[in-house]
Length: 486
Image (cartoon, rainbow, N blue to C red; front, side, top):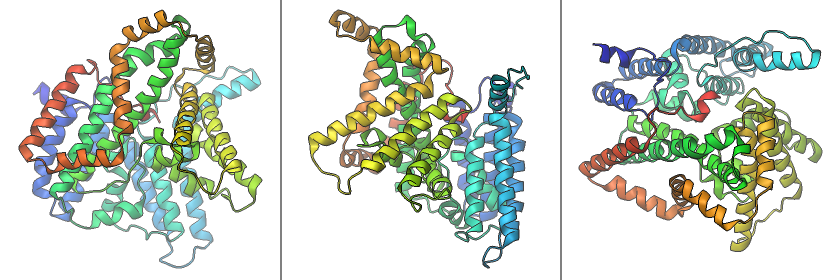
């Protein structure tokens, strides 16, 4: 009985994660029942909605009531925004603004209250108490999703959803609930209305993506984090310049494998249920410019920022100077979205400046010179890796200290061999991750197709081996996904 209760009750020390054995066990039971009810629309909707709320409770505790309140509030307000197909009027605009303010106020309270009070104290030399506010898991994702839905309804790009259960399904769907992708209503709500067509190909693709994401997270990201990144970023001054440099490379691989791993698992789980979520990562470290990087990295957020912030600021419609300012401001806000800290603003500002500079000097046609493209990829990756120092470091002081340590680097071959020997397993995983990342797309598709076409028994054996190996390599404690904090 105690074991059963442990599966049902929220444990702050062990939140429910896709990469945990507990989730795999619960999801297997969920699938068995889903196979019975999925052809009946009402039962399917209620069943997935209840499981989604249960999943959020197991992952984030009683903040599930905040999610439920946000769902009800946005449903009611969106119906006030709608004007039954007629052009928007003052009333519609008023309720749209009210919806945006309400969502951003909730997000601001939980995410930025402490940051605001800290800066007031710094400016005024006061000592106002900074409250210890716990950030609800995934709040940025589901509130941004709600805002995009309301704006689309206002612009009449998507009809308002009158069925509360369908709207709740859209906002609370558990695969993408706590870390994206941020799903647009027009991409997903129509899928809710029809009975999912779960083909053998969808099941194969879904399982392949889930296993790929599982390996990225539990084998690569967590191991590299615990055995290299966390140690060096905690005290850069205690490590050699080469170790500091390797930690920067390692964090770039860690955050990619962690976040793209989550997205792979989310998309895979949705496919197993018959639903299609949008691609969120597309080999971002193959980008030949920062502009291209943001077309490949966290695609659902970058497209959200483009469509609902950059274009709202005027986009490129108000002259070149205004375009550069809009790019910079959009990325500044994107940086602040990632965390209530000036280091995230700096991270966003660096990317905004890079986007503006690239826009200034961009050429209409990009060449196919292989050597030149390699150089572009090299410099783009190193710019992105450099900015990730501010993303990962505990504060500015640590970031500057780490950069200073790297600046002392010199080719001491005996030291290099010692460092490589000390971190050989982490480095092997980094090379493995790089190999996966840079496999030509055609070869990657062939590997996936081989898995999809394999007999069910072979798929089960492969999955069993991957889980067994992953859990044996993984840390004793399941590591939360990096983007859960955003």
